[in-house]
Length: 220
Image 1 (cartoon, rainbow, N blue to C red):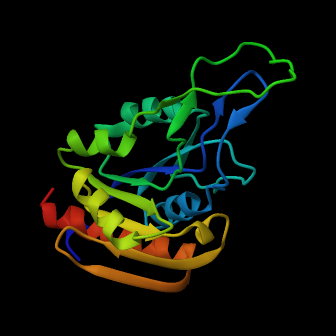
Image 2 (cartoon, rainbow, N blue to C red):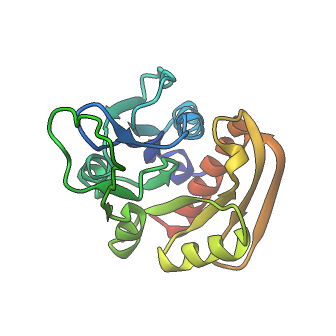
């Protein structure tokens, strides 16, 4: 193994959901637990790499490892700010988080009282963090996830191309909160690699291996 292969990489991993507050008590979110991102962070750290793990609100405890630095965020815009702060010094980004695509606008201060009528919310689009990173990519290896309920591979490959990613992992709603599931990794060369009924730990090991190989092929 060459000295380049032994060089620790800098991983930036995101995990868990975000919350978009309607008022000071109520919020929009999703069922992501952060488990996938935690598995990737652990696998990268145990392989000898340095990891910044950015997590949204989740009941699961992040992996404790001396090579993992944890940053906690709440909203999608918080997540974007944290990721952008670390981006230039990062070799590999694995965006396993499930940030909210929309936020209530405006946010109500305090608690909105219940009334007799319906409550109509206005939702504003949140930034597409991974697409922004793809536009600004210089040396980073970017890996994203695509949770799709239908037309999965076509939709995932479209995201792979639009967001300038090095790989995207296709999964389904059944993956949320599960310890194992079916996944497919797609790459820009047209390859499609299925992982059937595998644990998230197993997938994480393969993602870290893929990212390490991709960085070596860059010749950095």
